[in-house]
Image: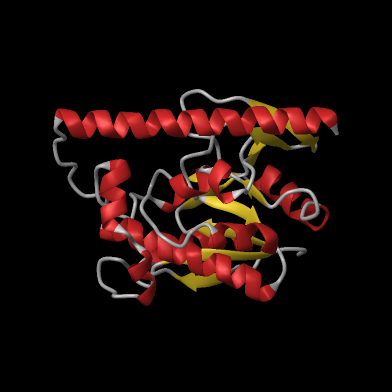
Length: 249
C-alpha cells in the first residue's frame, strides 16, 4: 500500500470500528486507528483554540462540544501527517467504502502528492456546484470543485496541505468541514473524486451531536446572511483568479 490509512474512531464506538475494519480487511487493507477526541467527556488542551466569541460574531451560534472534539481530532491528524512527512488517507469511522474506485485511488496515490494537496473522497453535499475533471482514471476521476463538500468523511492529505490547514487554523470558530471548505482562506484547493470513493454509512447516526438550534432574532439572521454573502464573494473571486492563472499556464 502506497499510502497509510488512518481511521478516526471514538474508543466507545466499537461497532463503528468493527464495521470499517471489516470493510478495509475485505479489500486487503490494514488501517491505523486514531483515538478521536470526545468533546463531551474530555478537556483537551486543543479546546483552548476554540473562540466562542468569534463563532457568535460570524456564525451567530456556538459550536457543540461534539463539533469541537471533531475539530481537535482532525487537527491532530493534520499534525501527524506533518510529523510522518508523507501523505495519508484520513477516514471517519462511519464511512461506507465503494470498493472499485477506492482501490483504484489507493493504487494511484504515489503519483498524486506532487499535484494535489488534498482530495475529498466523498460526494459533494452542496445543492449546486461545478466541477472540472483534472485527471481521469478507469473507475473514478479527480475533479476541481468551485465549492467545498460540507463533510470530512474521508480525504487524501499531503504534508504540505496539512501544514496549510494547521497554519490557518489558529482560532476555531466553525465546524472543521466548513473550515476545510474555505479554500480561499486555508490555501488548500478543493479537489475531489467523481464518482465518490466512499460515503457515510446510513446505519450510523452522527457521533458529533449538534445540539438544539436556538431561534435567531432578525438582526442575528441578517448578520449571518451578510457573512454568507462576503464568503460567497471571496470564494468566487478566488475561483476566478484560479481559472485565470491556470489558463495562462
